[in-house]
Length: 439
Ligand SMILES: Cc1cc2nc3c(=O)[nH]c(=O)nc-3n(C[C@H](O)[C@H](O)[C@H](O)COP(=O)(O)O)c2cc1C
Image (cartoon, rainbow, N blue to C red; front, side, top):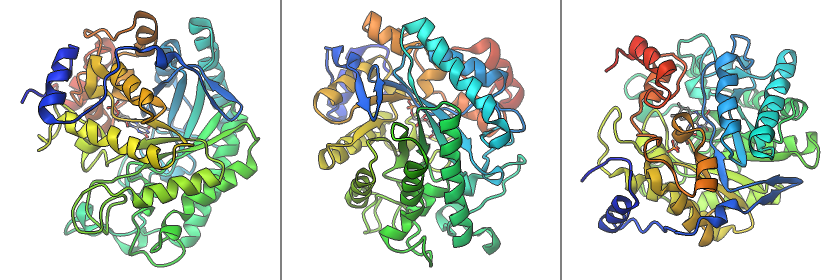
């Protein structure tokens, strides 16, 4: 079956019917214009720029020229919410030498960046977006000097196969206590820099996400569900206590990893890879009881099963499932959680493959109570004006949509600064040619 991104709504309808993916589709997009209140903040519309790392900070971790360019484009684009990319809170937890890293000595650089986003958006669209900083420790995927320097929660034979990572790279409980302190301090720094909120990142199998499945880890951070979620819960509680009452404390959360128990979170304990919402629902309720109002939900591991995380047309392999089935797993999975915990506001992920059908599918889910905000990832590299065009023109332009070709990721994996090779080609095509050889 054809796997191309949808350039026409009819193609989406045909495959949605053929695959039985039952994704809702609303013709009326007016719901996307409805504001949403979170804490003391108003998110002006239901479209969000997802966290999209550019690996283009300064060696010291501050935003650099390409970072500023990207956020100018996102700010101009008209989304009500900008989820500011993975920003390390400990040097050794950076995923690459140019990953953003916030600390006492560069908080003013972040302050200028946030002010610029707000001013640019206000000028272009007449409102300021809500901007939330993603605070991270990359754990297993730490590479602060450009070579892998993993810090893991536990050995995982699915990733490590017959080359287990050395025991001294398994972080101690005391180290995790320090990570919690650094995440809370990162929240304080984010507030000082003018961000509207912080995301205590717990997704895509970086450190906090890996802990969620540390079933066999001994000590305070492993075993029971309470222990496995301790770092996340305590960092959120600490950030809430340390920051002002209007500061949003949130998380980008993996609710399903896509590999079997005892190595995956949100999977049935029967050896299959089937989604089991039991533990994620417990976690959502705990976070809501801590005062969390908004969560950004995602699934999968971008290194190991990217078809779960970001359904693609062209990538390192051909997935058994159709990309639309991947999108459906994500969106229906999120809606299943919302049904159980309706009083928490949810942002969805993995919309880019839907192409021109994305706004209608988002509006359909919002109409049916499935989630509250549509979060666009790769699309924002390709088509940073997507929100403006959806809200004003009522449709996405098929000539501008993301083709889900994975070339942005190829640049990132080759150690470069990712962007859209197809739609922003003057800048990123030469980089792709140089680093990936134009393959
Ligand atoms: C180049 C690139 C950088 C990304 N950076 C981040 C990041 O900093 N933080 C994060 O949580 N997810 C990150 N993601 C994942 C996206 O936010 C998103 O979840 C994924 O691409 C699926 O959404 P989409 O189908 O709209 O692209 C990144 C993805 C790509 C391809």
